[in-house]
Length: 122
Image (tube, rainbow, N blue to C red; front, side, top):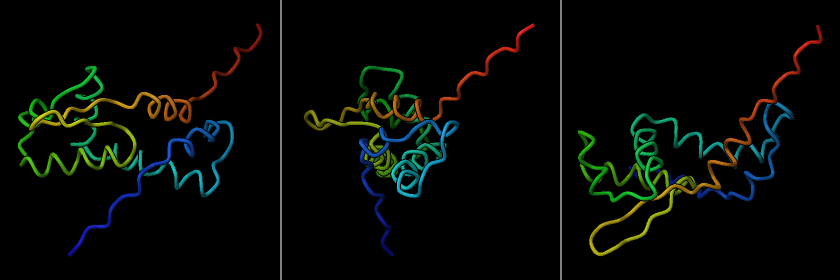
């Protein structure tokens, strides 16, 4: 049984979206953003993302020991984060190094921005 690959996220499609608290998304916008949220919706991937985001870059050799999972399983989760456009990776020798794609997080943050209500006049 083969697994269906997640589409690679186009960050330009995400950038087009106004905050969801300002204007409802159309179907194409929602389809462009959903893979990013889906990737972060898994507890292992969310932990991996927090580990990667907490440093300028991190080696997979430092990520794997933090989990009671096999190397291939960690690699799968990292691939999902990469395909969702949340991280970049670079192979150096036998190890792969990961770093956050700041533009992806800025865009998700802007999408989730909730304008503050004006305080009522007294």
